[in-house]
Length: 72
Image (cartoon, rainbow, N blue to C red; front, side, top):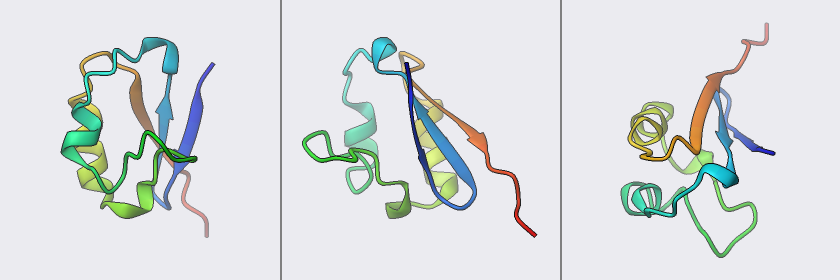
């Protein structure tokens, strides 16, 4: 099972079964990750590049991303 959260450029994919709750996501981008809210990931609160850099640092691989198809 996974959940997806999108901005205009990327979709963040969260796989909760892989998450080891290291807290790196919350510490790195506290405006994006709010564990006590739904949705808990708010990608609109950071740039796409900030999101990508943070996702690359996820130690468990629970967070990943894909680029969205461009709409004409």
